[in-house]
Amino acid sequence: MKLSVKSEYACLALIDLSELHEKGQLCTIGKIAENKGIPKKYLEQILLILKRSGYVKSQKGPDGGYRLAKDPGDINVAEIIRLMDGALAPVESVSTYFFEHTPIEKSPKLLDVFRQIRNYISDTLEHLTFRDLIE
Picture (cartoon, rainbow, N blue to C red):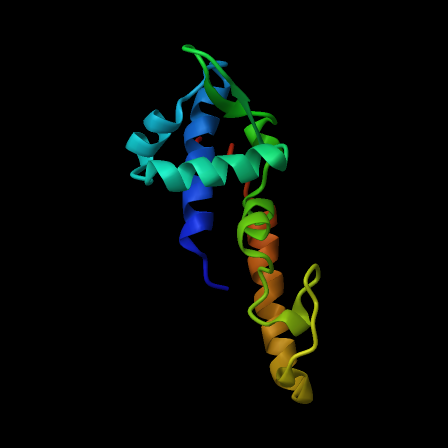
């Protein structure tokens, strides 16, 4: 698994919003971009994806901004990476959600190694919430 910059930025934005969640505060795109060093235009695209997927809400107006649509403890890192990048598995033929046949299936032992890697990655990231990342 290789994380894209898009996934990295999405996670950083969600961490920023998670930190403000308990206070009920909104955060502007500009402030998130500044806090986490994310290009503003790229962040706009990421927040739109997160909004369409139900992870964030936005409010328009002079006091507007973004906030989490869910509790940070209800959002795990795996689901955000899958949303942004697709499979967590190193090869699609061991992917639970994005299965496709690949040449590596010709070696059952090697396939098993990649399945173990997938299991470790998914188990770790599915049990890691954004609340865990701010405590």
